[in-house]
Length: 187
Ligand SMILES: [Zn+2]
Image (cartoon, rainbow, N blue to C red; front, side):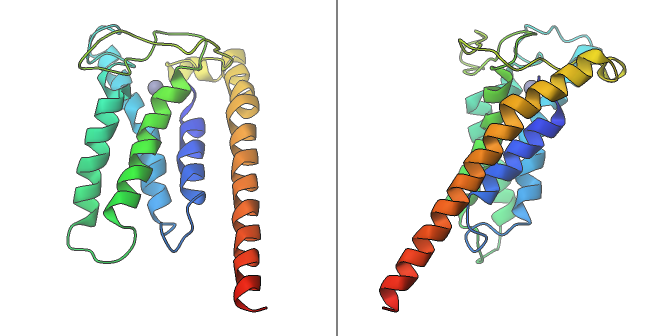
């Protein structure tokens, strides 16, 4: 797995792509937390749940069906009795992408088991053809080691940097588009 920092960074960055009028910024905390939460399944490793099983690490909680269902449930819970932004579709899409981004990032790592993208319908585990991200240690004690430093450096290169460039380009494009539209309205 990448570290919790990388998942949180990608979750909040996905939200920054949406204008604040559409997705108020306080929802970025929720999205970031959900982007990191699939790794709560590591608790199962300490409880004796086998890594390769349905409920094992990188299994059901990292799957796309889980992301759909969990995003839908949280959206319904958060949006109950609300008439203000974000709309259901925006919030659901954002939360789904946050949760789904977790397994996608994990599938780019170079260690552990693959990701059960289609769990519970299939327990086949997948990696992407390229796996440049150094897998992070699961045990907190091993994190404070050369392995942990390597994982953080690799995440900076392959997650933080590209994500930041994408967000900056998207924000620049939005700004140019707004300026263009304003210019058309006020010639
Ligand atoms: Zn994970």
